[in-house]
Length: 279
Ligand code: IPE
Ligand code: IPE
Ligand code: MG
Image 1 (cartoon, protein in one colour):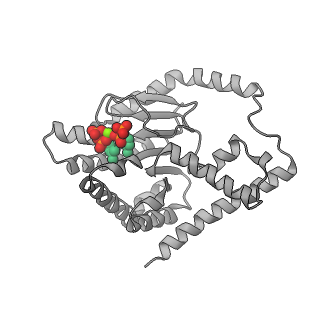
Image 2: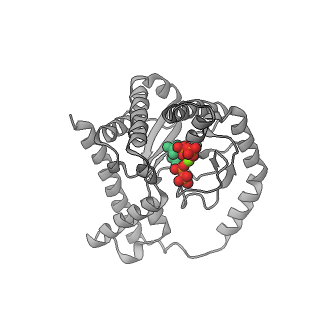
Image 3: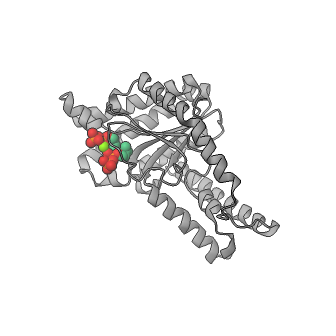
């Protein structure tokens, strides 16, 4: 089976630039171009959801020049996406940004909201771009939403369980993550999708991101296929035992949670609309 949802830590742009004696910004540019190419390869073989780590909260600590350069590239790519909406429409791609978007420069926030709004009706494939993202910040923000819900009396203590926390993560609309891939040979997760990757296969690929090829993608998919059966067995074994992590769902709690989560989603939609309306 082809993995439905893969995530990529696109790492190694600066090492690539160094190796090729080109400017760092050129390395990042090649990295952005590689993303477009990789998405096409994924669609070709039927992977319908891709989540990429494009910019972490830690990346804000790089030099101003480098951060500005990355924001400039992001701006151009988002503007291209809006201008060239035909490709997105053809493939029915819903683009979502995962992260603390408010940390990004205002003009980027607006572009992100425009892209999300433009593509929110599509559901044939999904591109989740992690921007100003870390997993720990994502979990913290989920817990803060729940704390607000408790303080406002929209939730009760007994409503809080791992499912509720999961429903308040930025990734709440994503499918389970099948395969996580990191390029550049670094074997670490760098605070990426820690919650979501509990039962995900990890593939560390020894090529720099701008050099990533269709064959590297296929090799990762083959790796997934070799281990997928084993993973399914583990999941089945866990599901069959009651670990009591989830609270018992009465009609009352179900309704309360539904109203609370609807409220959370409405707030998110409202934020997008507010950003779009800024002149
Ligand atoms: C990944 O490549 C791109 C971003 C983090 C934005 P790097 O910039 O981390 O390049 P290396 O890992 O230093 O080579
Ligand atoms: C992870 O790469 C973030 C992105 C690819 C955007 P980094 O290169 O920033 O990760 P660390 O800090 O070296 O682990
Ligand atoms: Mg790196």
